Image 1 (cartoon, helix red, strand yellow):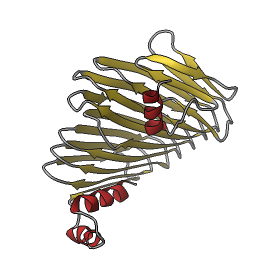
Image 2: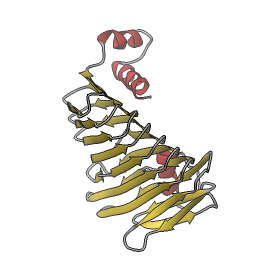
Image 3: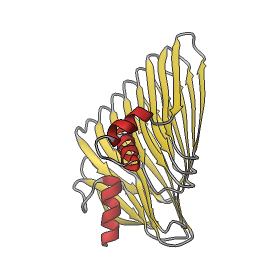
Image 4: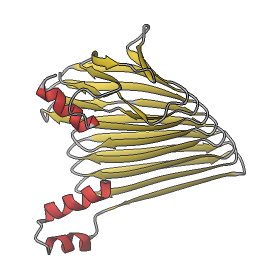
Length: 305
């Protein structure tokens, strides 16, 4: 791999080279490298572009890397990945995409991921999006993530986008069955003319199912963010959605909640807060010798960590 490839992999997946275990590294619409193990098998699809990731029942403490990097302009990369997580398995999946676009054209990745999480299984899914290169070139992501959480299973997702992405429209949907748990932690930073839309659709269909979606974001420059949540409780269940944002410069943030308690035993909560950095926080840091910009960056870094 070239130095640029390695730099992108480090930023989106903390990789310093080819990882151990199961992995699939994709570059500019093609497989760069792939490996399966006896615990986690990665099989290329035959009917469309993408892979099946099969985690065998009972597997514990394993991880799989499936990063994507784009280093060309005027490229649309669309891939379909399906995850089959066996009964009682526990696995960490590190995904994400990094785009380096030095052209004035468009570079875009559309990742359609579907998770089938069997009874008692647990998944930690880490997804990072990052863009760099020519400021005039577009770096775009429109991912779709579908999750089916079976009885007593858990899905935990960390979604991070902290720089350089021109446009993103992310849709995450989940169906949660009896005693299943669905959790999302989103961190988002936009600047300049960037635009980010995140949409969550969650159905709590099983008894004692639960979901928690927490988004922390910062909008700077002339950027725009839209957070849309749609949570339905169809049984005895608990759901919590929280959108907490910092607004700076001429940016705009729109939060649109929808909660629907179909069952009288469903308990659903939505919280949203948008505001600026407190003046006393800036003043305190500036008395320690930081400039206003340095103080602002320090507060934002701590807020998004």
